[in-house]
Amino acid sequence: LGATGGGGGFADNVFGASGKEEKKRKEEFQKEREELMMSSTQLMKQAKDNGNATEVPSLTPAEAVPFMFDVAWGFTIGSLSQILEFTEEPNCIALCLRGFVYAIRIASFNDMFVARDTFVNSLAKFTTLGSIKEIKYKNIECIRALLNIAIADGDMLRESWEPVLQCISQLAKLQLQASGMVTDEEMFENADGNQQQDDLEETSRRPSLSGRTSSVF
Image (cartoon, rainbow, N blue to C red; front, side, top):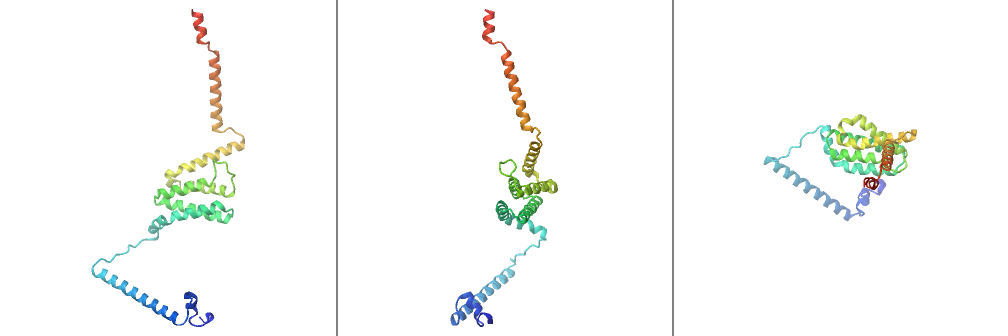
């Protein structure tokens, strides 16, 4: 207090006033505080006398987590996605992915389907597999995180397995392309092309209907 210019320095910084005006505001604040306390005490006594006192249920930390997560997960995924979209810092990327992992685990364990599917789909998009975007360090880390989630918590993913399997399929496709082997799509395309060519050749070997008609008559 002495460093701020006497006993009223703190109030001067807060209220921007001093002297009588400061004293008046402090008295009004104290009076309002006492009135609020009195009214709250009276309400509690009345509720207790009428037998309407509300008992707060006791919850263990594990039981309280779903309620807390239900309130916070929407803001959490927004923050994690925003940071992961623009950062290239390895420490930030690791923290964001840890948040995704724990959020998916909590949502899966507590059967919170909407939250679980939203986090899994969001993480799958950050892998950039199946797109024309360049794969960076953070995208590789997202792929690893998604695969680790599938290994550790796969029994609880249920419908959320679809984006995981799509990413695995895209990874297999990239591996085949890198090794120079033919992918399934290319193999089926070649098979369809060969079938069409065989059909054309077979058609060309058949005599035309007009030729058959003229030979008969």
